[in-house]
Image 1 (cartoon, helix red, strand yellow):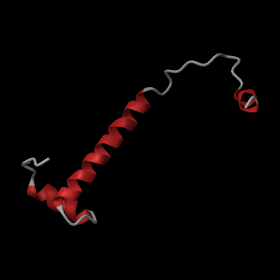
Image 2 (cartoon, helix red, strand yellow):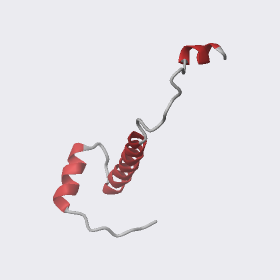
Image 3 (cartoon, rainbow, N blue to C red):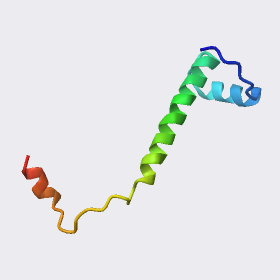
Image 4 (tube, helix red, strand yellow):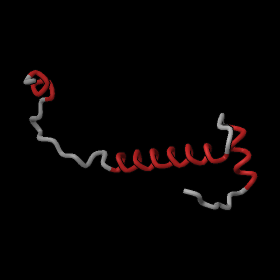
Length: 66
């Protein structure tokens, strides 16, 4: 897909200088992948502490059952 973007040249040049990517297209694709990965991680962190286990839950016994 071809998309026209208006990105700050200074920002883009700094990102290119910090990366090993030869083109802006490659850099932007990797940046989007990293953004998506980070957002998924943040959603997972929101779940932390929301799962309630039974008080007598014994993970060692559960492992031996296999």
